[in-house]
Image (cartoon, rainbow, N blue to C red; front, side):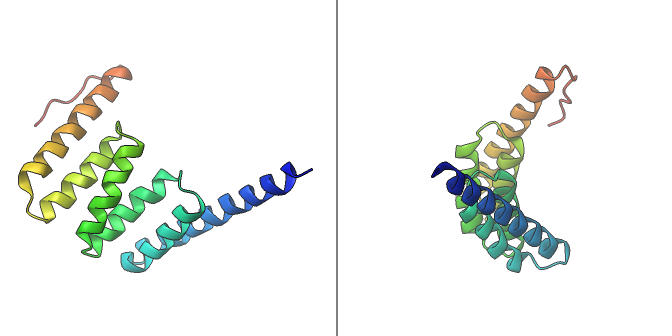
Length: 130
């Protein structure tokens, strides 16, 4: 009998997380990424597995100039999904904005290699532009 309330509570949390996520996306679309940060964080508090919200949070932090926080979150995103080229690209961009060029180039290279690997696995001829 205890399983139903837990399941219901989990479902409610996931629904609330999704709502927070979409509200944050709306704020980004409206040109207010700084306000969106709070929404993405609220989403992740309810559903830490929502990697799209982590991506959104990283971008919103970047757009707000909160680069150090963005680096922390991008690093966490990479720890959760090391094969995500977009996460490495986001970290590269943050490093570039901070003037950390060597680190930015290293992350950009990782992103390209991961994307090429993905393309090969899907049978797509990878683009080799550097």
